[in-house]
Image 1 (tube, one colour):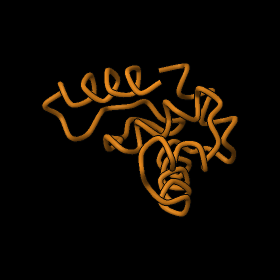
Image 2: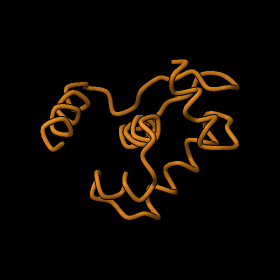
Image 3: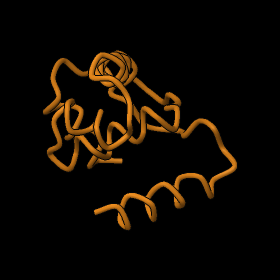
Image 4: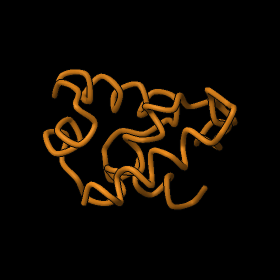
Length: 88
């Protein structure tokens, strides 16, 4: 719902950090706010198209964020991203 989305965005914006420390498969890395948003939504079983609509971004942009997440976290698939997302 929009209220849930707004509460979530307010929560993320409450952080002064623009990057969030995260434990990847090959060590620590930093995720941008958008990368973290995508990881959270993908962990809630949202598709790239759904995430694009939620964040008001293009499908291609979401796919780029997910590709960057896979690289940073050492993943080969969205399922591995979800596993790492839940383990942090």
